[in-house]
Amino acid sequence: MALFGNKTAPAAEYPVSKPESEWRRELSPEAYRVLREHGTERAGTSPLNAEKRPGTFLCAGCGTPLFDAATKYESGTGWPSFFAPIEGNVGTSTDRSFFMTRTEVHCARCGGHLGHVFPDGPQPTGLRYCMNGVSLRFEPAGK
Image (tube, rainbow, N blue to C red):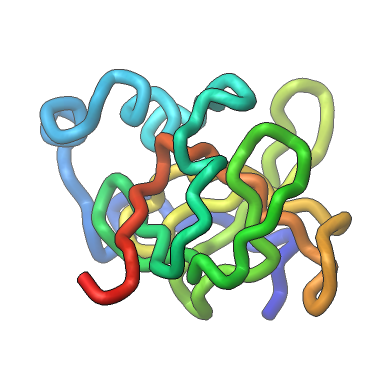
């Protein structure tokens, strides 16, 4: 899987595409700011940081399964972190904002901004998917 250098498809090319007015109605103001405007929530503010149950982390915008809870780990960054996504459900693009180059992670189904991926995570992948908790919702196993 090539993580670095992929480009985000234009919004109209995502399977889930809605007018911005509809996204605004469906999402909280903070979720809209992060998912649709590429914002970042403050570190340490997400209740998902403490989530340790088996289950699945879904896109808060469209419900696509993004991360199995078994891949979550404590990175010490203040954001929910994972070492691997569910295959095919996230995309990446180059983010050159704030005078640096990073790899942005987005939902492959709706294009919602999730966070960034860095090459300093644990094995087996060596990757750290540092996600905004407001971009995710948690579904416990067995539901």
